[in-house]
Each structure stands twice: as C-alpha cells, then as structure tokens.
Image (tube, rainbow, N blue to C red):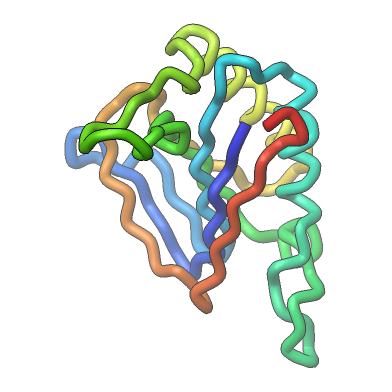
Length: 148
C-alpha cells in the first residue's frame, strides 16, 4: 500500500458537485492499494499515519502527531498512486489491485483509522471526485508499507 499525505488547513471532496467529506486542520490522505497488499499493510500504514509527527510544537518543530493535535483525516482512494509511467505515454496500472480487492482494503484502512477516535471523513470509492485543499507548509509525504 502507498499513502500520500498532505498536511492541510482545510480540505473537502465533492462528488457530483456535492461535498461528501471535509476536514479543517489535519491531513488529506490519498490511498493506493497494490494487488499484493494485505490487511497487515493497512494496519502498518494506519498506525504510521495517526502517529506520524508532522505538526509543529510550540518551538516550531515537527514533533506532534494527528493524535496529539486532534487533527481531522480525509481519506480518499487513489488507484493512480500505482500508475507506472516508465514506458510510453500512457500510464499502466498492472500493479494496482483490482477494484473489489482495493475496495476491501481501503474500507479496512478507513475502519482502522476510525478506531483512533480522530475525526475521519472519506471520499467515495471509484467515484469521480474533486478534491480541494489548502496544503499547510507545504508538508507532503509518501509512505509505503514494508510489502512494497
């Protein structure tokens, strides 16, 4: 699994011009699932995400996690994180999990993050979404499970 995380001051996701998820200060998470991923990968990334220290403390150092600051999490499925652009001009998606498998692991990841008690919003799996965000910093990280 891969997650692309962006620290934000606010974010929202729309489907058919209707807001389906939003957060204030927190993190937008784009989630890609590979065909070889398991729940162990989702467990690893959920734990990493909620405890990753990317928020600033009183001294201005990245020393606080979403758990420490009560930040919201906007979780959005994103199969294109497994797009392979090395050959030709059209990305290939052979490494991405099939939709049924990806839906299961995405849903599992969302539930694992919700267990943290943090505010969690989501997009809609396989929908065409519009994501609007204000990246704070900017602070952006790509994290992969050890399986990658």
